Image (cartoon, rainbow, N blue to C red; front, side):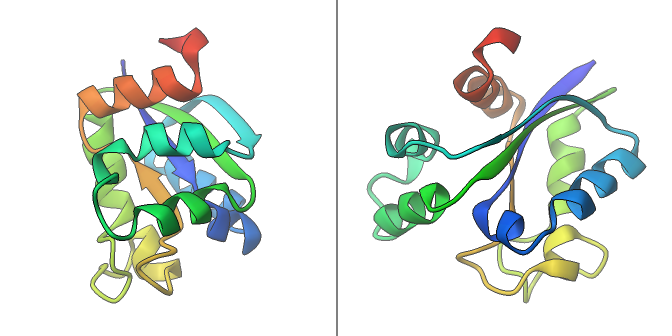
Length: 136
C-alpha cells in the first residue's frame, strides 16, 4: 500500500470542514492510517515549507500555518496515493479549482486554501517522517 500526508489547514479547521474533508477521502476509498489535531510549532512549519523559504510569502505562510490547530492525516491507497489526493484537492487558487474538488467546492482564497497534500512519493515520505516519526 502507498501512503501520503494530508493536512487540513487552520482555515478549514476554523470553518468546521474537518469532517467534510475526511469524508471525501474515505468515500474515495482511502484509508486513514493516522490522524491528529495539533498546533504546529513555527520551527516545524518552517521545516515543512522549507522549499518556500526564499519566497516573499514565506513569513505569512508560516504565520497562517501556526495560527491555530491543523489536522494531520496519513492516508493509504493502492497506488500513487499522493496523485489521487492532489487531484481531489484541486488547484491552489480556488477560483481555478474545478467543481467537485475540495478547493473548487469549498475554497475562498488562494492564501488560505484549506488543505495540503504531498506532491510526490518522496515528499510524502519526508512529510510523514516529520509529523509522524513512528510511522516512517
